[in-house]
Length: 504
Ligand code: ZN
Image (cartoon, rainbow, N blue to C red; front, side, top):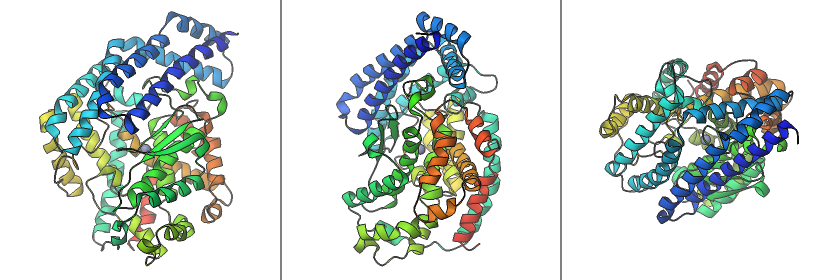
């Protein structure tokens, strides 16, 4: 074995541990009885420390030094770079902190689920306080120059800082708030039919149909049900998604599934030769993932869910099929009325159900609150009130209870501070990528109108998916669109679509 092969073999073993962590995580969120939470936490803690210990072992570091000396091509140099970054990171983070985070996460998620069910913030509060404290320690260990939030952001979106985020949010506000105001002066489109009785089995059958249309490969995936929808992969050969069903609200499982399919296409599209490598491992998050960053990943879920799944060409092509699944519920509705209903803009309490125009306001609210929690300028006990005040300020709403307010998202219970901004980054990137595909692929609009998604998927695979984590998000953007992260294409997309929809 040459020096690079030796490193590759050692990294593959770490990757196997990360994939095992993912299997246990998938099980915890879909199948595990609540009683399993505590021991599952111990198992995840053990595996996390094992992965971390292996990464900073003298054996691996020696292999890394030797591989660095002989690395020549892109894959080799980037592999060395990613492993080097991970080693440096874990030499800063004490293994006891990693283990403590993993252990606490498991219990805290279980308590959050219970607290959400009973809308009991007091039950979750001490666990949240502990998660904040652990993340503060994590930020100190990772290190930062300006804000502790920068240290945490790096885990999800390398290159993004609290400062650049502020600029991004303020340009977005400037574009979105006037659009929202104009929309609110118009009457709401009809959408009563979306709340008719849609049986779960039938919803599932259309979700499977749409997933296959987009190119999700069920021989390397499966669709299950969970409280909070997610996608998770155990190498590109086994990429799973989940959704949740609401009999009286069709869009929930439908667009939720399309969203997760977008994530899954990314993972299934990673080049086979990157399997079990540093370029399909998020060492910082101790997570096996093929995407370049959380934001890049979200750009794909948003692209397939919104830019395709909520587009007029998509429904002109597939609404008749949906009507055959639900003849009684949708027989009296025409395509355009359905299209307008699923794109209706209406400030709502729940982020995952939010329309495209108000979505990023939900993110801004969370980012402002989590920054304050981490900086210590907001106490956990004050959080529900602060949440409600901001929701009033941005969306003019007051939640009836904490379950539909501060307790709605799993993220804080899972210790994911700094991950919310990646949703907005994803929205912005999605429009940039889609714009580039449209100019570079001849006949793309015609193919999409004909229900042929292969040309788009091929462009995305060639420009994004196949590389895994070889390139940084910035490099992927610049190589495929010629631009860095910029909000203009996203704002243009929103403006065009919604001015047309609302006759503005
Ligand atoms: Zn997502």
